[in-house]
Length: 72
Image: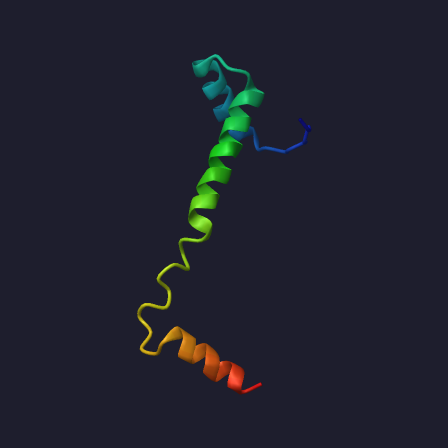
């Protein structure tokens, strides 16, 4: 496990302290869980904005690709 140094505004430190106190867990564990949740959420949304992108196009994707490559 590696250590990192992160600067946080006082407001986030205070909110984090509330969570730590209410859950009775170490601050590092709460931060690790938050980062894990953020990474998982990003993995779910990274590819979703491109799926179905071509469905509203009038031309077939392969035909379009072949036309573009014919210009080379």
